Length: 482
Ligand SMILES: *[C@@H]1O[C@H](CO)[C@@H](O)[C@H](O)[C@H]1NC(C)=O
Ligand SMILES: *[C@@H]1O[C@H](CO)[C@@H](O)[C@H](O)[C@H]1NC(C)=O
Ligand SMILES: *[C@@H]1O[C@H](CO)[C@@H](O)[C@H](O)[C@H]1NC(C)=O
Ligand SMILES: *[C@@H]1O[C@H](CO)[C@@H](O)[C@H](O)[C@H]1NC(C)=O
Ligand SMILES: *[C@@H]1O[C@H](CO)[C@@H](O)[C@H](O)[C@H]1NC(C)=O
Ligand SMILES: *[C@@H]1O[C@H](CO)[C@@H](O)[C@H](O)[C@H]1NC(C)=O
Ligand SMILES: *[C@@H]1O[C@H](CO)[C@@H](O)[C@H](O)[C@H]1NC(C)=O
Ligand SMILES: *[C@@H]1O[C@H](CO)[C@@H](O)[C@H](O)[C@H]1NC(C)=O
Ligand SMILES: *[C@@H]1O[C@H](CO)[C@@H](O)[C@H](O)[C@H]1NC(C)=O
Image (tube, rainbow, N blue to C red; front, side, top):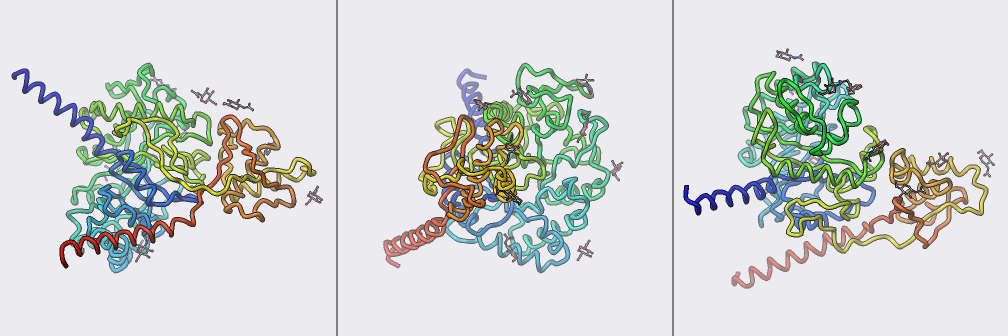
């Protein structure tokens, strides 16, 4: 090979290993927030960070509309509670597809680039029991049939995101894994369905939760540290938790006859609050390690040089109303805080090589609700607990960013969270006379007392952008002499 052609080849592979991986990196965009960042700002945030794929948990009209014309590849989600009706009725599936997919795809002017419909969100999660199992395959088949009818089946694929607790092994570390016996039969039907339609297997990989649950897995091993002590299993050497989990998936697939099934990592990340070791520093180390690993194109011992087809980072933004059944860290998975501000730096293929913040975020006034120290505070703890039941006090939990603030500052934290979530309405800072509104920021050290986003403007922006679009189309038609 001549020097020049070698140079070209090397350049090509270098470019490809960067751009091809960038093309296959997406994020989960959840909207379980009391004050979600307006969808139009979120789409700008995606674009300015060179994120070209997004996975949604539902099909909110304002979100799908905001993604229209953005050229971002979209996974639309069907909530688990809808699986029963989608299994029992083809008509329900046709309607669901029409209302939540077809009309956005065929929107003209580019439309919304929908690539997958996710049937359920981790419906096999162990904590759900078997309540969704009987409906998953039927719902997936009905959605597939609806896609065919709408002539979208060559563009949009049906997938079912699976939780990482879908697998079992004799020891947690074994790569001799198989599917959980209660889902084995349904899983084989699902894999046959996916295989028939050439759809990938969507699966969560969670080195953070594996670290919490497995005594024998070190933090360094979870964080892709070079110095981590490797694990040797089935004559393979594992240098990080990601590879071990990924090969667990491959092994389980192979065991039931699908060794070559394409894999999409549909959820992977590291939270930054609400638990020990959930910090921005460790999250940054994890994300950098993950990106380097994906860019290296090394693959895993069982699938060398074959990284996942796509990888979705969990998640884009923090969500203060996400269920904390799995742990207080569940509200803190974001690369960005709830208001679109980067928590740390990671290169997702941006020109700046680090995360770019959301712009022009509009906040509520600079006001906080704190406890009035001049009052008898003997009953304040009860009021704080009541506030926490409705608001978000996860930062106060052990290991959280506000765990070490002293009483009664923790009461103030709870009061403020409630006050902000209720749009700073004066009556939401009452607490039996114990609350006090202040313009002095009570934040300290690592413990931030956030001010929420002004959300009533969301509607305004939507109207303005719609009018702007009409104006654009009208001008265009006029210039064409129509
Ligand atoms: C799922 O739908 C099929 C077809 O309508 C029906 O026969 C079956 O009973 C449904 N399954 C359950 C568990 O309801
Ligand atoms: C999707 O379509 C169904 C059926 O028409 C509808 O009931 C539902 O509200 C739509 N939106 C979402 C988010 O599922
Ligand atoms: C799962 O089902 C397959 C095929 O029926 C069977 O060979 C395998 O032993 C089952 N595995 C478990 C863990 O039940
Ligand atoms: C394996 O994980 C389970 C929780 O999923 C945990 O209870 C158990 O202690 C773990 N076993 C080991 C050896 O770490
Ligand atoms: C922990 O993992 C190491 C390396 O794979 C292994 O040698 C050791 O037996 C494991 N210990 C336990 C308690 O599982
Ligand atoms: C992880 O958490 C444990 C338990 O709180 C703590 O002892 C340890 O220092 C933490 N490690 C890092 C690197 O933060
Ligand atoms: C504290 O609560 C108890 C029971 O509700 C009540 O009897 C008492 O008066 C309260 N104390 C103050 C200082 O508000
Ligand atoms: C709380 O912990 C952080 C770091 O973990 C530290 O910087 C800060 O000084 C601590 N604050 C107090 C009041 O101890
Ligand atoms: C605040 O701290 C006190 C003392 O450590 C504790 O008893 C109380 O439960 C805490 N309240 C909240 C809402 O965390």
